[in-house]
Length: 299
Ligand code: HSE
View 1 (cartoon, rainbow, N blue to C red):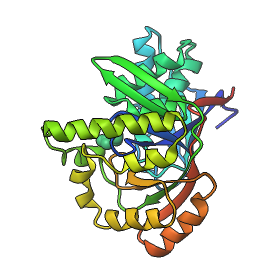
View 2 (cartoon, rainbow, N blue to C red; view 1 turned 30 degrees about the vertical axis):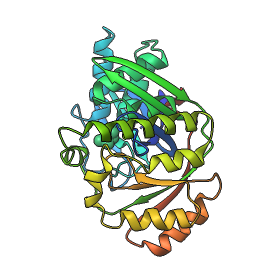
View 3 (cartoon, rainbow, N blue to C red; view 1 turned 45 degrees about the vertical axis):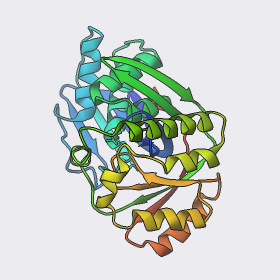
């Protein structure tokens, strides 16, 4: 690749934070970088084995997103060559597809001169993804709480969440559709009321930086974890161990299979080490909340 026209960096994200199903997400200090240059035909080249199997032409998600974003804005989408490097585990509940969508929107905005606002990018991303959580956090960074329905997006953005995290990544990936297929069609009214209360208190606690309370509420989900955790036989032991090690709280990361452990800032490394010793089947990633969302880093 010659001198790239553009380089973009987009964070990984962890969605739901327990009861904030399809609503809450947190950007993490783990990134995908995309370099782009104009070319005669579409081409996407991934660095590293994990991403090697992804489509390298027009079927690629970043490419489809660039084309769709241009189309929505009534603009042309001339082809580009993209070189992608990602530290985000693929298909492991860290928003890798939302990161690709956010990268595609950012690339289209710059390369095709669309002049999109961050809110417009978030709405286009939610429309492409079908739900708002990961993609809005990937675009905006920080912590976000979003309501997305019938193409309308309402988001509250908390730009500088001060919290650490350990992500426990198992070997096997899990398709989001498979994990969503485990969810029930209906929920008892009383359970939904409890779940909504947990989401509300968690969101308010995060907004005022009360991560201890947020961590407790994060463990009160009724919307998805009770149906999904049967895929993760050691989830309860991890939650119990992490709590004893001083963590704020534990949840399934997005649709899984990774597990999110929220920690006091700067204790993520020591808690990651302890978790690694106890649960060797997982690769622990010690990270922090990322204030940075999708951004063009060089032009
Ligand atoms: N909210 C989504 C889910 C996140 O839990 O299915 C994964 O896209």
